[in-house]
Image (cartoon, rainbow, N blue to C red; front, side, top):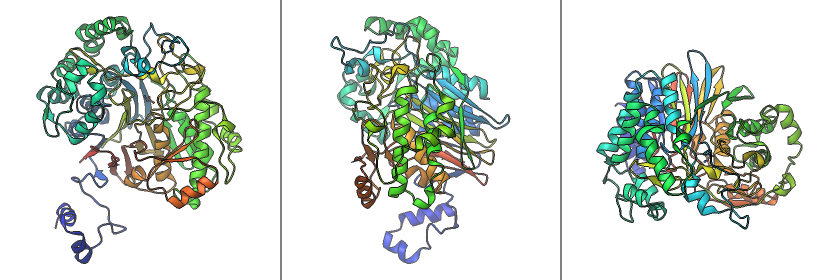
Length: 579
Ligand code: GLY
């Protein structure tokens, strides 16, 4: 019997019958090879896209089948997610792409982060009494940075892809123009934000069809304005977004509604290639993104802090392990608040922060069996908040090219404002700046002078697309959404694989914790043993159980010539597209 039919039979068999008659499904040495069932890790050889959404993941895979490489697939998926995953896929946001090029054996960090408009000012989000105006910082046109996604995707595709732009963008146009059946995950995400979306007439028209409700699951969902915007990009390249009709529509909407982005801001937007940050953890080499992301630096910093401990003998998610993990998180996030910002406008001491010597010094602050308070590590003011914003996908092709791409509108649906006539949701990335040095942003992150609002500055990010190398070859690609939760999600995914030898599915889905120094508490997912929680509390940890998943690490691993992928299915809609 073919293995696919065999597994399908097992899944359809009542449990008691399966227990009595079937051989064990997970025999220790039997790899599960099932191309159809995303409940299991995907396996493939031709290529793989581990995507937060199925239609866009399949489009990426189709580029590989047409002879494109991982970069073509990543760009096609990126444009398609702008249509199928509007809470985070985007044209109006920005992100970071990390590319491994097999032939030249080099890694490229493409920074397409949003940039503050030229008219932005340091105190633009402060009320007269000095408090932060949250409504302006979260849900106004002034909350939007100059979008980078279109420039970034086109840069990646034209420099490192092999297919014509028209080929990689056309599937997104078709989806927007002809529509698609509303997936349950889209229905759920729109429903959860319907009240806020309805406050913007254009967002209400586009996403709620003029009503108070999301389209029903299965209902045809079309976005004709977005299709036209994508067509202009297909026909004119970056000028189809940063010039001409699209730029004119954005600039006119901004001018009419107290927004700051001008036609000059759009025309002047630049994608940047930067050197990634690099470090080692035991036999592994880690390559990740540099500032304006804080993610790569703090991943390396935490790995350096943890490296000398006998983590494996502590046991996965044991109290001894989690204690060191949480304390390392506190130290890293305390440094984040002080040192990190746009490297083009502030001096970030990257080399010191990621050095083994600095970790040796800071590790002295970690005491066995006693938690540091946040105040004993550094100052701050707490405002807790979790978010499901941002999205990450990982791509690999048969030639050995790998892409880890994280991009975002900041909040789910960004500012919840759509530029009339374009289908473009505006980001609210300006809230990733410190509206006031020392005050917490929407993620509760306390940030300093290095990340205050300034014209043409890129706000500090936590997005952390990362590739791990083993024996000189790419081994694991990962990243996550979740704002401040991103870095600790990536850290634990890496440790699960590198230290605890988990396969990619287990590494991605194992319960996680999160501490960001301020607020002074540790989030804990269900699945961390209650006994362990009691021990940690006895050691002084302040734990908060969260029912929401911490991050979503859509990851892939390359082992023995096989691509193995897993989308964190604890959130709806994830998909491994592979052959
Ligand atoms: N907007 C979330 C981040 O860039 O970290």
